[in-house]
Length: 150
Image (cartoon, rainbow, N blue to C red; front, side):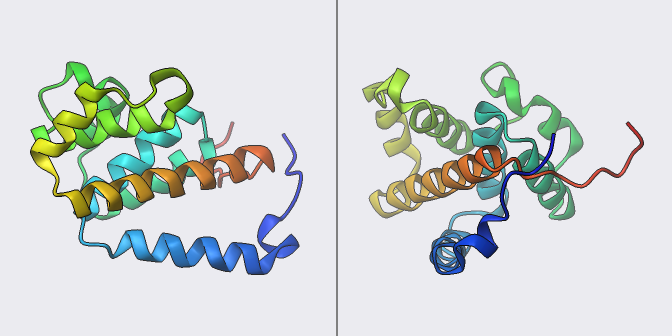
């Protein structure tokens, strides 16, 4: 697979604007571990190898366990995730697949049990931002670093 386009170089002002939004959600007050889980989960759903690689490395560096990272794709069937994380992951799944799910009331109600209204907005922005990054990386075929021989 060959990269199609260096999108930061092609549209630097657009890239800077997206980075500003990314910087906001990174420091919006949500737990760092939750932010990384959401980024990884959305990237799994979208099939973005570049972002999965980046955010699993970031999560490990921040102390996330290998076991939780391995089980993230099956989070509904694992007791290793807190109720707050489960609500965020359900919302991530719902918004990332919004054309299919229409953001169900049950997911929204569970979200409200664990997140303030402000946190719901911040989490939704986070989900939106990682989905934009996924679409850029997939669309322009960004390649993740290869540390092991293939």
